[in-house]
Image 1 (cartoon, rainbow, N blue to C red):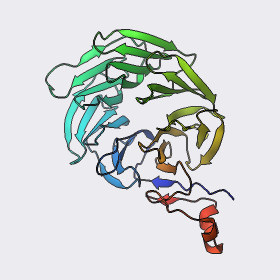
Image 2 (cartoon, rainbow, N blue to C red):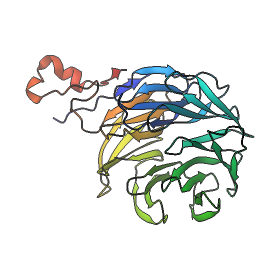
Image 3 (cartoon, rainbow, N blue to C red):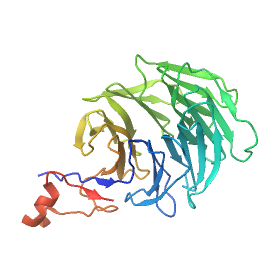
Image 4 (cartoon, rainbow, N blue to C red):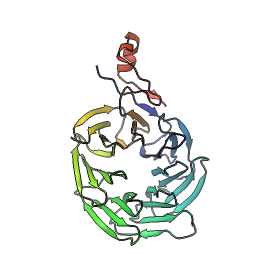
Length: 329
């Protein structure tokens, strides 16, 4: 009998979880931030889901959240027309950056000195965090609200996905559009992978992989239900996706074959991301929870303990294969 996936459930949010992001690997492990419509983004230990703190200060739903590589800074995008930068060690608000409409996306440069923001006013903004009195650089071109904006190509270029059914690549220096991808429906999510310059996007039931520099299509896969988010494993062996049918799907990247599917959430899955070491993936849902899932089921890692087949006596079989296995983080 196959080992059963036992997700760790991270509770604490009171509304749907709409975005999440991992830091890089630091001397203290890696960290996870979640954005929620309750207006209270949370920081957690990445491998266990243990709550570290809540960033308090937004007066509306938080739509986007990110950490810099060493997890010393956090940034959030919210419906109160601000993006905020936080000290993620102390939890203190460092900066509040005013916008003219709802902010949906925030992304640090690799050196953490600049913050890219985007949202419902259709503009990309670049804030110099070392010179906060300076007005942000603004890039216009999208015809509708921008869902996600990410640095790419060593922060020399920017990728943006908007409700005008396009993804656009911009040059940071000239602030000009380099290339546009047009779709027949709105793009639901976008992930950028620096290693290999791969762009992972979702629209409808499709998960598509593009070269991030040329925007040429590499491959696509179809899921059984509309997908809201997908993430590629750091080693590029697998990718995972989640969407409207409450399930998490795991696919083989080489063959695009569906390997596994798990139901753990009680509402649509809005966001999914692999951890930086690839040992787990996190999902955030309409049900207000985050769940952490093992990439290799049964491995000893974080709060999961390896269970060998000979250890599966009568008393543990119900625990391993019961109808709703769950660990509360």
